[in-house]
Amino acid sequence: MADLVETAVNAGNFNTLVKAAKAADLIEILKSPGSFTLFAPTDEAFANLPEGTLDSLLQDIPKLKKIVAYHIASGDVRSDDLAQINEAATLEGSIVAIESADGKFKVNNANVLKTDILADNGVIHIIDAVLMPGVVAGK
Image (tube, rainbow, N blue to C red; front, side):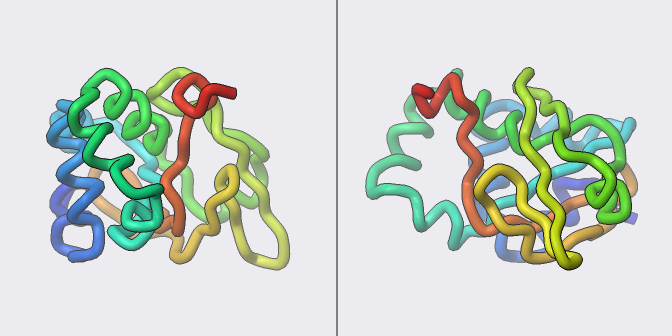
């Protein structure tokens, strides 16, 4: 089975996420053994960011690293686990809120489009928005 990075690359709609993870030097973590859950924004989710946001983040690697790490949780958290929790700790250091209703999930304000894409070192859940940790969003 492929690791999280190979799985994301093979899916074909996470090019921006993979580019951001490479720029933020987080590829090795996503390729490492151990178990991770990746809340993966699609290329379309990145395209929905305000104009210029992605370019400015690619110039601000510490901020980019916080944002990409905010999409990664430790452990293999599958949909049946998501249904039982209301938050998950991220590698960035803060937590994301998990909401479950009628078999659908939300992570913060992002809708989970598809759950449980398995990789040999974790699981990917596809989300429709880029998550911003509070320290970056200026909350």
